[in-house]
Length: 190
Ligand code: GRF
Image 1 (cartoon, rainbow, N blue to C red):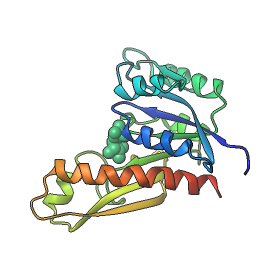
Image 2: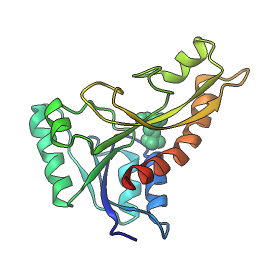
Image 3: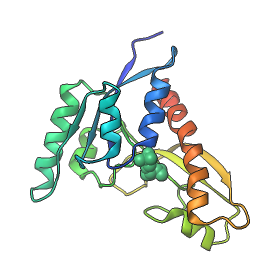
Image 4: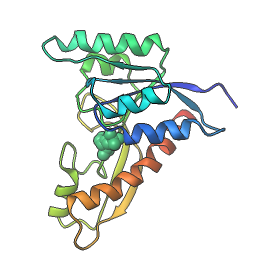
C-alpha cells in the first residue's frame, strides 16, 4: 500500500463527519491520515473531540481582522503539518477565491443535499417543502462558487411521510458518515 496521504480537516461545529473520517482513517487499508483538525471557532465541540483523540488541532477566529490574515494563519497551520488535501466538514465559512486557487482540486466538502439541488442552507426543509421523494448528501470539490464544484459522490435517502427537517437531517447525516470517507478514499485512489 502506498504511503498514506495527509488530510487536514476544517470544521466549525460538532464534527460528526470529521469523526467518521477519522474512524475510517484508522482502518488498516485507509489511504489517508487526518493530521490536523482546524477551526474558525475555538469553542467548536469537534475540536475538543479531535484533541481528545490526540490529533493536532488549531483554532483561530476571523473576527475583527482581514479575511486574508485569518486564512493565511489557517494555511500556515495546515502547511506546517504538510497537509495535501483539505476536507471541509461543517466548515461554515466561504473560502476566499485566493485560498481556493492555491488549493485547487485539493479541497473537498460535504453538503446535505443532492447537488445541484439546494445549495446553501436549510436544505432539508427546502426538499420537504418541494415535495421531493428523495434527499441526500453530496461530496464535491470546492470551487469559488458556494456548493458549486464538481460532485464526486452522492448518497440518497428516502423522504418519508411525516418527515420533518430534523428527522430527515438525522437520516441524511447517517448517510453522510458512510459517504464522506468512501468518497475521500476514492478521490485519493485516482
Ligand atoms: C453536515 O450536515 C454537512 O453536510 C454540512 O454541515 C453538517 C456538519 O455536521 N456541511 P457535522 O459537524 O459533521 O456533524
